[in-house]
Amino acid sequence: MPSPAAPRRRLPLSVWVLGVVSLLMDASSELVHSLLPVLMATTFGVSMATIGLLEGLAEATSSIVRVFSGTLSDWLGRRKDLVVIGYGLAALSKPLFPLAPSVGWVFTARVVDRIGKGIRGAPRDALVADITPPELRGAAYGLRQALDSVGAVIGPLLAVALMVWFVNDIRAVLWMAALPAVLAVVLLIVAVPEPERTVERARPHAPFTRASLAHLPRRYWRVVAVGAVFTLARFSEAFLVLRAQSVGFPITYVPVVMIAMNVIYAAAAYPAGRIADRMRPRALLVGGLVVLVGADLVLALATTPLQVVAGACCWGLHMALTQGLLSKLVADTTSPAVRGTAFGFFHLVTGVTVLAASVIAGALWNTFGPSATFVAGALFSAIAATCVLTSRS
Image 1 (cartoon, helix red, strand yellow):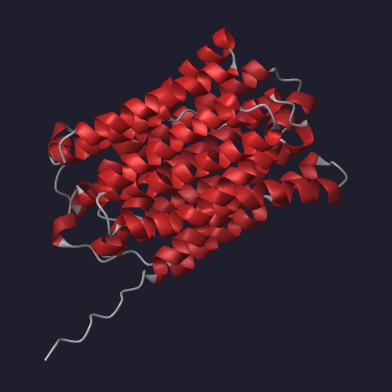
Image 2 (cartoon, one colour; image 1 turned 30 degrees about the horizontal axis):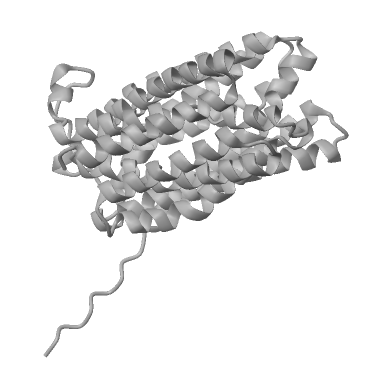
């Protein structure tokens, strides 16, 4: 007599709640980020070069902090406390933007926001793995990425609507960003429990020592290397906006490019995560790189705004196919005892790599023009796909 089919397992409720928390905070952050350059340039007279420098410093701070928070979550045996602190700092930074009397205040608020992101990033990703059955991790990371991308769509749309409502009063609109941020923190505190500490997670080593790295297996470092190669092939999304401007996209509608990218990212991330639980990672990684080659070529050859939007949509599909999968691979190749450390180092390496890729892309843009930047991206993506195909499993 055949045995009854095993019941289909569902994602834990806490994974859904973490996804909604990400949605709310990302909507808040993107609302601010879509208006912050305008505030700095018009109200405080800051140059574009200075704005770029401030943004780079803020993002670098976030990448560095992730290493320490991830390792600390392993040593403490607790994830949620650090996640709450990270989201709490981000929420506290939001009122500083409309209150800022100078660009120094704006920069301080931006750094506090990025420190918060750095503190929460690695422990949150490790927490998702801790509370999710291994066979559902791809779906879990895909869901979180999808809801995060929904927030990235809602934020700029809210900014546009509120700017109309408040008759272009930027400070009044920035005050509204505090509401979803506070709601995200409250929801996290109330609805996400800290998983029970297991023997495997109980302080296996002192933090920030060579022993902590010794617990990370060789297959994990191969995942880090793959992540770095992917990131070199995918420079900052800011170049999508610049490409839109270069083909005559009206400045009022430039945010449409990022909205289109994030709509596709949000729609495809969860299905891609479920696929990642069922097929070989190598095939999905190569598929994502092939899509990125297509996106780069479309953007390199684009002469109209519609073509840039199409390229941005392909870019979002590439992100959906690969980003959740890479998180799943980090979780699958490490034990719970060092999972926070693993995510911290992974984010640090990819953060530094995207900075290097963006510098190269900017140099190519200035020297040879926008098409050269995206042609180079397509070539590097093709090389990366070849490396993944020919590497050992």
